[in-house]
Figure (cartoon, rainbow, N blue to C red):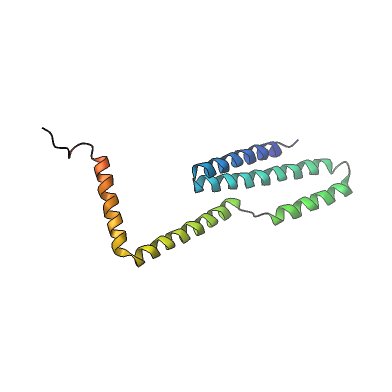
Length: 136
């Protein structure tokens, strides 16, 4: 068995765990990185399988050539850069969310300023400790 197959399977499992953790924690970046690791692990595992098939091709060349051709076709259908694809999807998602928030702010500027001022006041009070407490 080729080491790339084992490494790919381990990377795939790690990616699944990261994606699940990101899903549970609500961390989109971790979830997308996990999916990208899972895809990279699958690609690496498939490459290891192709290497194993290449080793076996010396025994039965004709059938192995057909198997390798099928593996190459399968690999060519998969995206070459899963991390970039995941990053592009995340950027599109967050860009759309930002546009939506900016539209709400443009539609209701006074409410937005009031909410921001109130949040700032509350955060300031929480972080200030007890400096504003009257002492007797």
